[in-house]
Length: 215
Ligand code: MD6
Ligand code: FE
Image (cartoon, rainbow, N blue to C red; front, side, top):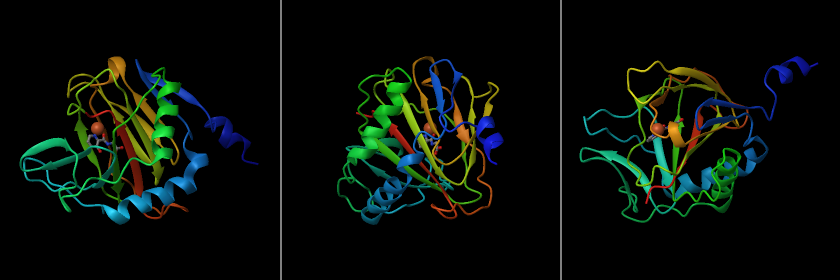
């Protein structure tokens, strides 16, 4: 009965959407229960919070981190730091299954031995969005970015090296993973406002895990 649906969007489809950039459809889906439990454990010790940009705007996305470094933004700027500014304590360690999933996805895109030291955990409630930006706070641009989408669907914008370059719109659903590196590493990207909805496992939100080599 659902064959048409799967033919249209095969569970393990993959597509190179830009040079060095790969979409892995449903790649994280079989780990969904474990991922949900592990995310809950991370945010139990280092809760989601809405940070402010250096310009003073409160971000619509709520964030937490795990790993040796966490990405933060405040009046002083964007940066990675080893401790949670809310508690002054180190971020929770990177769960082994998080690092393993990110390394498996990176390997699919040709990046062997990806060892992320930062995992940003983003929570988008309906209406939350992320404007076009580049990820340039890391040290080593030979290392890719791995992004895992869970819960509510979203439209990911993926542009070029300049802010004004036309951005493609990639629909992302629960379990999809994106890897971008090489010539795509510094491409502008963002997320359109998440539509209202309730996901059967994750509820009324989209969760995104973004893995990087920050230090
Ligand atoms: C996403 N997040 O949440 C994509 N980049 O789907 C990002 O691109 C991102 O959340 C830099 C810093 C924080 C982020
Ligand atoms: Fe980003």
